[in-house]
Image (cartoon, rainbow, N blue to C red):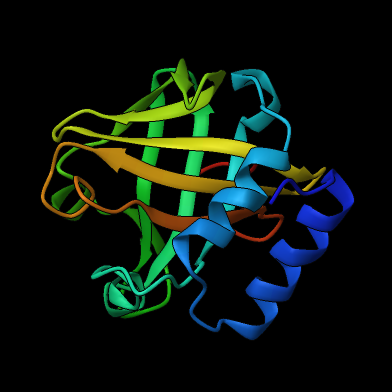
Length: 167
């Protein structure tokens, strides 16, 4: 099924609010209707959440207290921003196997801003839902995403400033 952008946005927010498991095919239909983004458009700090699809990673990010991602510049990216026991935000380099960088990468025939992990063969691709929301698909060669993609979202974070600085 081919969705209009408006249908995709409505379906996206329905899935975010319900947190019900969606078939990957339905999430792929939403993805296909959304516009690509550039690196400059996504710089900043983001809160994250999952789009459950029955993937083995569903629920795992909450266990590590994942907060989101920091895109401070093209080469300064914290992909696994988590909360410590005191509620402070930090870049969890152990779980992320280092940090990451941003690149324009072709995925499914479109070039969009993508985050390439430094220490593992994983790429997160992003598309715009609205001015403050991105949809993401985790792709790569690890056993976690080789056979099935992991779907997630990011929303601009006005509260989660990096230590020693803001957005």
